[in-house]
Structures are given as C-alpha cells and as structure tokens.
Image: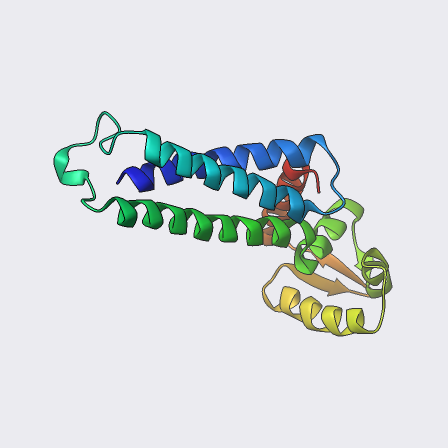
Length: 172
C-alpha cells in the first residue's frame, strides 16, 4: 500500500510540475519536458519508498504489503502506466486533429475544408486524414456541413472549451 500511496502523490506532483513547466515556457519538444518530469517523479518515488516507513506512519498492519520489492515495483509500474495515459491525453488534447478542428470552428466560426487544411499546413496525407476525421465528427454529431463550411454542434462546444482550457493550462 505504501507504493500505491507514494505513486499517487508523486503522480499528482508530476501533473502539477509538468503543467506549470508547459505553461511558463514554450517548449520546442514538449516530450523532453514530460520525460524529464517523469524521471524526476520516478526518482522521488524511489527515494521516498526507501526512506519512509512501511506503514507511512498511519497505515494499519492489514494494509501493508509483506514484500518490499512487490510494493515498490507495483507502485512504480502503476505510476508509469498513469504517466503513459497522461502523456497520450496531453498530446491528443493539444495536437490531435479532431481537437484542432473543433477548436478552429469554435474560435473562428464556420470553416471550409480548405481553411481546415490550412490550419494543418499540408496536403497529400493531410487530405486522407481530414477525409477520415471530418465524416466521423459529422457522424458523432460534433459538426454539421453547411454549404461549403462546417459548423460546430452543441455537444462539441463543451469538448472544444475543455480542449481550449487544457491548451491554455499546458501552454500548447
């Protein structure tokens, strides 16, 4: 149980430090900052795990893992999995094509296919990406085609606002 509690505390610290770092500085390669913060959190977890008493001063005997290596590796593995999920979420919310499309429509109003393509600065493979994503966004009720443009539907507003909030929080 010590490993799980320390894992939760170190992961919470990881989220706070990474958000502050991403907010305070514009990174060319955000992944380096995220990996650095994860390495720091994993190091802190390791240090705390071996410095703190097994009961952390408040856990009952029935909540203690009898094997210190099992307790340690369980917490570290869970923290690594949480970090992986966090990493995927940060990148999907900040750089995902669907998120960017919804934010563009939210901020600028109706967008044509060409305007959306210009946001992603490309062609060729981008056409295949947009050809796949735009119909899926329509089918899910997030956008609607109106004339030459795409208009955001009410269910997508909450999602776009959440993405904008996270983008501002993580400075993406």
